[in-house]
Image (tube, rainbow, N blue to C red; front, side):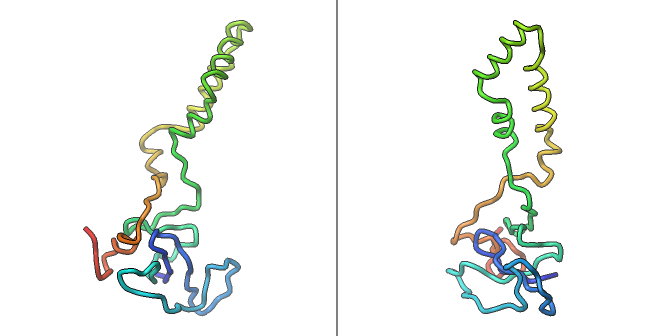
Length: 148
């Protein structure tokens, strides 16, 4: 376990490095420092698994690796397909030239951006946005004001 300072939205502000080992990233500190505590606190020191780094987030009491930007797969597909006009133009040219570029384009988009539910659930869920009234740490079991 390690100690991290998270903001109310679940982002990591600082990570304590035991023994003060030097780290190149600015978020690493040698020891905890005091922060405002209580109902209006905007950050809090909490325990985190050892694999957590500055890219992880605390979302509803769960640590989530956010090292890769979340992209809604449906939106990504829409962008990759292109506009209806450009697709119709591709289809027209295929009909005139006897080619299948539009079909190949659609097949590539479907292969590159799968909509299979199992793949979508693999650490690709949309980030949860917390508020000051319901901070990210309020879902932790060891917190004084646990939310169910």
